Amino acid sequence: MTDSDIDAAVEQVASTIARSATEIRQGLVGRRGKADVENPSGEVQAEADVWADELLADRLTAIDGVAQYASEERSEIIDGGDEQVYVAVDPLDGSSNLKSNNTMGTVFGIYDEPLPAPGTALVASGWILYGPITTMAYARDGSVTKYELTGGERTVVEEDVTLPDDPLVYGFGGRVPHWHDDFHEFVREVESNPDHKLRYGGAMIGDVNQVLTYGGVFAYPALEDSPRGKLRLQFECNPIAYLVEAAGGRSSDGAQSILEVEPTDLHQRAPLHVGNTELIDRLETVLAGE
Image (cartoon, rainbow, N blue to C red; front, side, top):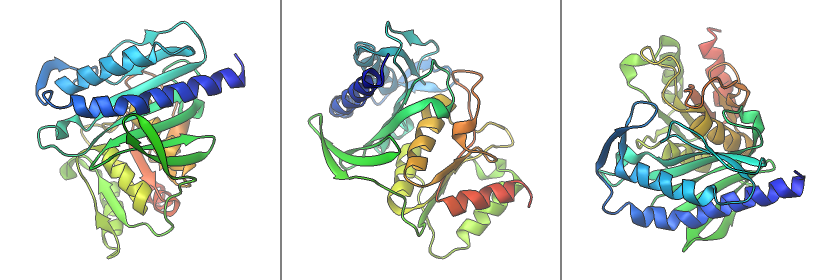
């Protein structure tokens, strides 16, 4: 396995996901109901969750160099033949927004170690956002690029993307009564700034994309009834953290970079906080009781 082999496999994975985005978006029509089955995290799947997962699994496992395909929607890893890259996907983040026809996305991470793997093993990550237009944010080699997707083709919108210096937006997940007191304190600080604007749409990827665009902070913290939060480390936290850090921001589980969290289970959850460095630094200070 050479670096060029890995590069080729990574590019094929990213290109395949980009080409599939138009079909996934169009395929949401008629698939807005529930599938009456649960994913490994105990959440009821939408018909679109199952369909998007099957589509991506078929296409990504057909790529030479993809050793494993893992998804938030299935309990077992699909093993491929070549040990080059290992792909973890949230096929349809925010599928609960289907009923109200709001923003959703696809999140992916490409690792160079077998899954479950730490975020330090990521070699690329990205997300597709199904908004008014379909866009892709993609991190590779310490740089982030934004694309518009039309008919499966990628058009570069912006290269070397970085978070704006002046944070503007914030969004926090979980029910407020279940937040810990120290997180409440951090939220009060953020909301006390008259320049900060609330942006929370029920799809993590839409909220994080707001942070990438305008600067700010997104968090789905540890909760009193869910100490590890809600989001999955392999499929959501690591890929998001990798991209935000490549864009000059920071990630944290409350005490350290998300990328440093050691995985113990494929569907392991973790608290996620991402955004401008000064905000995440302050978050960790508050959570440490300082």
